[in-house]
Image (tube, rainbow, N blue to C red; front, top):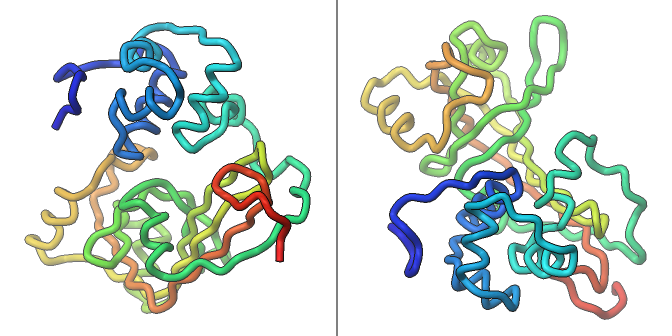
Length: 235
């Protein structure tokens, strides 16, 4: 469904435009919403998404704040860098995240990591995931380590996180539980229909594996005064 003032089809022609459009869509915002947050106009937000725009740093800061992210993430500065290189924030504090918010942070789909015991020992594998009926679903190859684990009854751990390098804060969600291979055709079709994107690793990954978490936990590092936190000192 298109938001007011947006065309029925549009495409970004720059990396910045694609990142802005993707982040805006993920937050469920319209051009008007972002424009109001950033002190701009809907037309200029559309221009940034659809043209090869080169906005100034002042606007980029406002746009990043409006999209609840960082200038580095919007411009792709951190895309090829290992995360976590920034210094710790001043008076940072660690907080536990409740199970309900953990599921909200997973946001239905994305890319995370699975830790599983393989033939050569413990392995950590990046995976596309989809949340379906309180389970985490993966599309994998029939002979993959994850598929083999789903037939042996061992537990696996799944983790997703988000880091804000500019303010040295972020969150991590961890789910632990057994996996199973889905064989019922109706269930397989239902899960595949719900999948937001195909596995990044390519074709040939048609086996559906689900993780039924028995434990869902999360932690957040917050820095006083950073976006989304209180300005007062840590308690």
